[in-house]
Amino acid sequence: MESIVIKNLSKCYRLGKRSQKIAGGGIDRLRQLLHIYNEDKKKHLARQIMALDNISLSVEEGTVLGIIGRNGAGKTTLLKVLARITAPTSGTAIVRGKVVSLLEIGVGFHPELTGRENIFLNAAIYGVDRRDVKKRFDDIVDFAEIEKFIDTPVRHYSSGMYLRLAFSMAINMEPHILLADEVLAVGDIRFQHRCLERMQQVGNSGTTVLFVSHDMEAIKRMCSRCICLDEGKIIHEGNTLDVTDAYQKFMLSTPNQGVVQSKGSNTSCAFASILSACLMSDQNELIGAVRLSQDFLIEFTYSTLKGDVDLFLGFDIYTRGIHVFRSYFPQPYHAPVPGLYKAQVRIPGNLLMETEYTVHAGGQVTHKGDVQYLTAYNILSFRTYDTEEISMPFEGTYHKLSAGVIRPVLEWEVTADRNCDNVKNNGGE
Image (cartoon, rainbow, N blue to C red):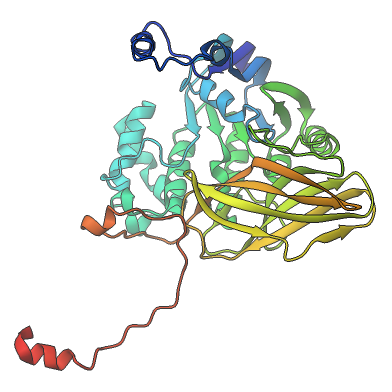
């Protein structure tokens, strides 16, 4: 029996357009009266992003389906449509049975409620009877490994604890369909393995699982079937090994397919191209997110189109529109022959903070005295997460200050001031 049937599904996002059915029409009229109306409105009205473009797909009950593709390909949008978080622009998506989604960490958690209270709250949202929750409560807590903190408000939980609780709740709600996005990249390796094993178990028991990930090894391990999206379309579908192999060849063989083309990007010149960027662990394994305390690598793939090319390349990291830092080659690299080249840069642990970062890459390419330039905006985005058991933020006025863009672990030393006794004797009592 088919759990999911998708026919001619499209989702279009319009840039620069407001609906005339709501206050947007009045806003446009006000702009006209104030003479600040955009002369290029027609051009902006025509700008559209087809997040999903005429997709048709059927998923049999009990299938564990992998969904892969570069950033911006439409993977998360597809899950949001199936979870009824967003409505499609056209087409239909028939979903049979109870759907539980893991699209963002801790969505639905109330920060002031304890872990125990949030379990019952989310179960009610899923439509699970309170008596059933009590029967499953111990299993949820045991799998999440938060016994000591079950009666602590979740605002004190680390992102790792959020994930464990969210996943454990979802998997123990006995869904007919489980939608899992890249959130499974967050968490230590041991917990990731437990999640994958549990997802395989629920798949074998008849639950349909849709699993989005950039981790090809995880996709190969647990998915019997796979689809690859690009620019909102299914470009490959079938056996997981065949699809992942085709995707990796596609990313390397097609110029600039690894790069999300943003305004201002110039990813190719006459001498070289920036192809892609990815996250690597310090053991050179692909990862989807970064633990705050671990060193990690950003790996850039370039192609040179001519021999005797000098590459002087670098990157910038941003978060929330704020420039965090820049790094570049200590000296130009000489590429003697045309071909593919990989450059890795190590980022030390305990430098970044718990947030999402975006990477822009670029540099200078020289061939026989002729200098040209490369830029690739938004070539990579990634999330960092904390694995500390509990997070106790500052309270009061100090807590309301900006947390900044990095959170380095520095050496601190606390000593007793030799004048403490004098202060005490002069009125400290």
